Image 1 (cartoon, rainbow, N blue to C red):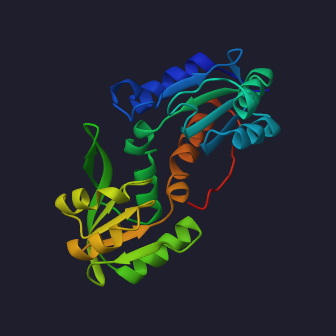
Image 2: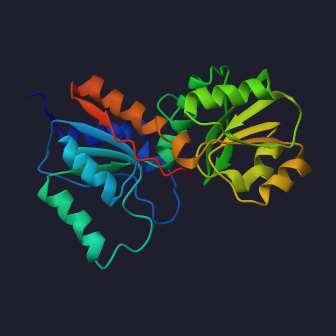
Length: 253
């Protein structure tokens, strides 16, 4: 059975993703969140660390779980009820958890934005959309009809995106920031895009998109952020000769 050192894998991920260089949202913890006995034989990847996905990881036989949304976003105590059950499962089943939030969004090859852009066939990409002092998104100048872009998104994401048709029928300057960037339409427009692809946004953004003359595609927070963990797990599988599996646990959001 192939195996690799947890320490080696974590060191490689931290260097690859430049984990230490990122300022993230308060409460987020990038990097190794829980360790195991130090040996990895199988990797699982999923978007969200939760009791359900940890149960799925245990059932899959994995001893390393790669996630985008980690275990820690705020106070994590007391360890009672479902929280205790989650911690118990991690310890009793020797399951390590590695989380990468903004570093994985921004990675130029394995990141959510890069992988979604590639899946959509978009090229000549440039960094844009500053968050926490880093450029997280990607943009490109590519003439494409709004209907064609919607069709591509549906093929890639598996469901039709929600469209806010505030702009022209033809998209020319397209920006991508996966996840929950819908509240930042003004920033996207200021950065020069006429079409903005993200995961989700609040109700009031419909009127704002019309005001800004901006086409907005909401593809789903979950759906737009499956790409990075898959790409990272595949990369680790190739480098360390380890099997991996994606654990699909869609939220519909």
